[in-house]
Length: 221
Image 1 (tube, rainbow, N blue to C red):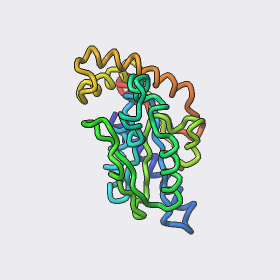
Image 2: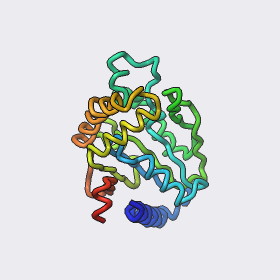
Image 3: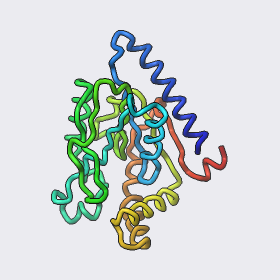
Image 4: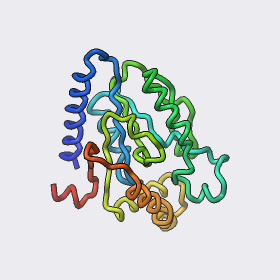
């Protein structure tokens, strides 16, 4: 895993160098990275490692999780399927990212797992942030119309059973499910459905970098 992570970080740094050279007349232009993939794939883990390597003084994250609809906004059906595409504020997410591309600064929501709702204006992006990482499940969906915002695209894949177990552990630890058995059922009945939707509908082209976080894949590297 460490070797793979370092490889993708090296690739990012090379792409960023190319980006700077191509935009030499606009040195303040920010480099936008989109990181998408299935639930439990390890998007947040990879994203944080990238920030740690590049430096939080020049690199910041805008997580799609901050655009969850509030619990009070969800119907009973949506609450049972929270994490599905229609449980996010897709329009606000797109508008905020487009404004950031134009203005190069702004405030963005994070997500509080304790209260299970967004925290508005919790993340500040300033003009000195040279690399902006946008991380979330549905970034590369055609209907979300976000893909052209990114200068580099990374898609996280993972063995589905392994991803389910990661998600179940997360649900249990966060108190979303009271038992690990209920968490496993939630992962299979909800998050796996979302994963299949992502795998079947993401726009993955030849310019998208694929990063496999499966433990079996890592053992074979």
